[in-house]
Image (cartoon, rainbow, N blue to C red; front, side):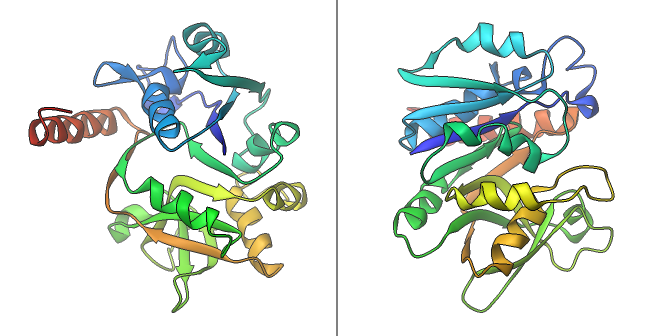
Length: 244
């Protein structure tokens, strides 16, 4: 299964850490965010990494070259950051089957494999790793509603008044149908082509999207204090498993 990584962002909220590097190259526990992402995707069985780059893309390409741990890397340039749906369309020509999607600014220690297994069961058209967060934090993310079967029925991007505290975590699996939905997305009030709207279009078309509750943790590294939090969680894990 291919894995798409979105890593075009400038990371303005992470300054000064991103003054001379793209967001994906910010180090957490001595390794760039993208290294954490790539390692996990390779462990999940990715046979190709398709990476969307943008701001200071040369730093990423110079660091990783054409392969990571023997898995080939394909780069695609997002010339203007216009939202996640726009970024995903940049790789449409490279993806021809079910695929994993990871946002390149997350650090996970979680059950990502459950999401991939659900996709391979062919029971759902997509599967998302989701997490219940404090209500005060929900407005930072794409917020999900689910039905009694654990299927996602609605997604709202960064709402001022969240309808729930269940949020998308930045790890998904999709069929290529998501690309058709992304083509239909119109700019949001933020002026971006939102992935959440593409997801809603999939749902409206009758597609099934399963929510897989997180077991473990993840940190969305959006601010300098998030990097410190991720490093603390990784250190805790290393202490708990000194042989890792």
